Length: 198
Figure (cartoon, rainbow, N blue to C red):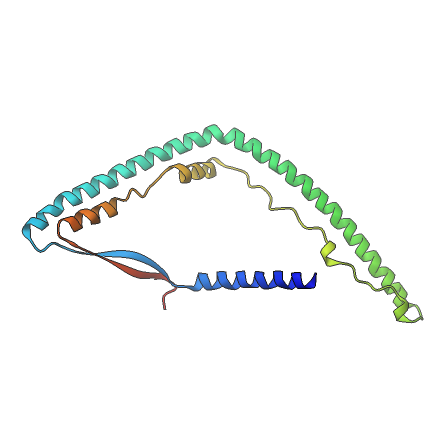
């Protein structure tokens, strides 16, 4: 039992240390250095690239706005069901929390009673070894229920649906770089440190 407990503690420490190291590690972002074509034909070729990229961004933004509006309408339709699910989850949570409070009260009573008996025995003039050993198990302590459910709101539901259904990244920049390269321009990727840089 002790070996398993020690292994669990060791595993938990490794997770904590690993996450701390990851949060301190440098974070990089890929940026692109664009070199214009060297010929007049190549430079002229770039004009449609820019126009297509601008059209792509405008179209992408319009689609995202439309999708966001639909997400809000969908959220309004789903709110009654979400609220009903929330109320059911709250009923379950309340029942578990009440059970936890009762179990904790009985646990505390038994613990205090055991301590009291031990202290009373120790205060009498006799061999202290004859007193029962107070070793109330900490592992028997009742555990608190999971976190309280969070009430849904129109904003939170809209955000959830938008995240699942709407796409803002339409690869316009990728298409532009491809067009730029096809016109004879240079596209050089660079890894730039943006956080935790030394």
